[in-house]
Length: 175
Image (cartoon, rainbow, N blue to C red):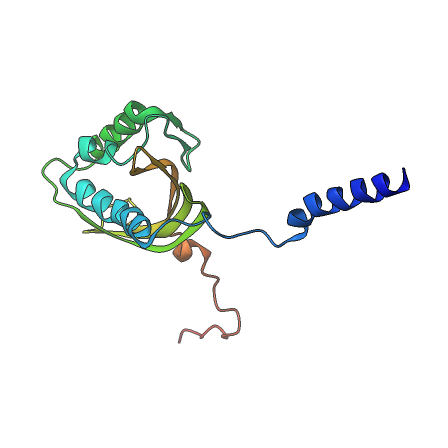
């Protein structure tokens, strides 16, 4: 009986040993080709923005895309995403030419089929009353061997509003 208990504990210990090992990183990141495909989404988005091409921009998002923009507007689905873009483009001056440059600064892998992505964007020329640069963060997912945004948030650069006046300078007296 004692021998059987020892054997049972020994077998349990052998079965439990893998749980004591550090987690394997195999399969937790995508390939270099996956990372390039993710970075290409940013470039394709910027090019489509410059053309005001909501169809091309919609091709970059998943059918179940969802976001909440800085104004609190909740967008659901690819069609909702495209409708929100069409509304934004309709507010721009007719015939105005605008280009966008964007850079993916990081790809942080969640697992081999999901990543968080962040970077910066800039539009030119600046439209009156509109932000001309900012940052973005997106979640991307690989489905059917294709990378798509499932959610994203773009934020305008508000650093000009955050600049504090220099209180160390003494006011100059006017003569």
